[in-house]
Length: 181
Ligand code: FES
Image (cartoon, rainbow, N blue to C red; front, side, top):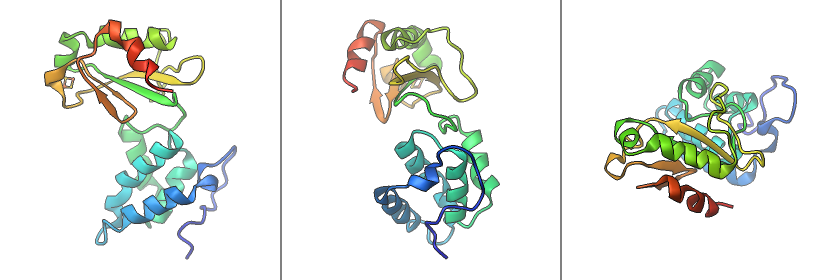
């Protein structure tokens, strides 16, 4: 069986599974080797690799990963829908996730989130749509709240893509965003 072949389910629009680059395939193949006993344990690592590359996990991605791990589609879909980290739709190219749990909230996390929104050109009152946060008009940034990022001693903190940024002030948010192109 060709493990890299796209599943046969028909969907509309561009399918992520039809444009998997060799580099991503190599990372996926390598990740699966870490779980020789239970390939199912590779589900979350593969979802992270997929989302890191595409920015979100579309229906074809769910199908493809399930097939790659010899699982049912629901085994992957339930992970994508359960964990807020995973997205089923495109958000900003640069993802700003501001902690709102107690230490960060007390240290000004809500003000920091609003300041990030303003610096990115996003209305701070713009609502979330499911797991999809508001996105800046140029599509560059999305800003949202998340729960504790395990860096409570340096609150308030945010995760910008994979970078943990600590001790943020509202005044410093524009400078922080300017470092991301
Ligand atoms: S409360 Fe924000 S990192 Fe823990």
